[in-house]
Image (cartoon, rainbow, N blue to C red; front, side, top):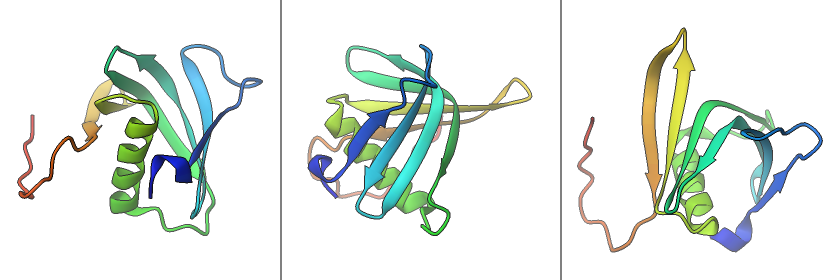
Length: 111
């Protein structure tokens, strides 16, 4: 999947800065993203993310990671940080980075 393969559509009627609702139109189907979006000079932070969309599509973690990288490239940011909160505790702090050079390792770093 390439940046030209997807379309990001902001639902301006429902969105109110910083809480934005996007439809991400992909070759596999439509994914809806709702969250508090904060754009930096080289990154995007999404807090309180909610995901919805085509129920028939098996999105899965691998497909979502790939889609996150494509979105980062489309928005021309180095990484996207996702923060999901439940009961005021940060459960997940993950990032989708654009590859800048070939990756030869599958090593994961946790912080």
